Length: 156
Image (cartoon, rainbow, N blue to C red; front, side, top):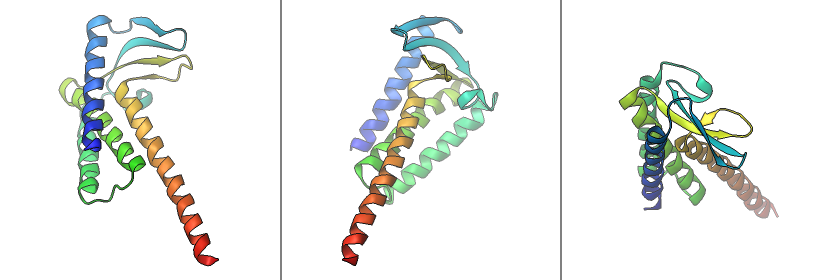
């Protein structure tokens, strides 16, 4: 149940935030959000992360559908076990759906979150996808450590 709740929450919050940005700002317009750390700048991205693959939004939307289908397939088969993996998968699905909706409907994605570091413009779906990947990697380390401890006890 938590898996589906995370997906719905990420998708809804992402879509609402993008709608709000589009209704408040014009393309290229900025506004401060949190001191000097985060600002909002409305940008329309027709490609992928880092402004790569510009003009490929619809194809990337189809790729998002495939990724979501694959994750749901593994979820239904019971291959995604553990809290970290399940939360990571749900964040990936929610983010893929959030960006996929815009790519398929509009041919572009609304990006607006700019960190002081200046490393690109993101949206909440992008942040969910990044967090999902981090949780998957963390799960790999936890599983690896657990297996090492288990195998070490068997040897003794």
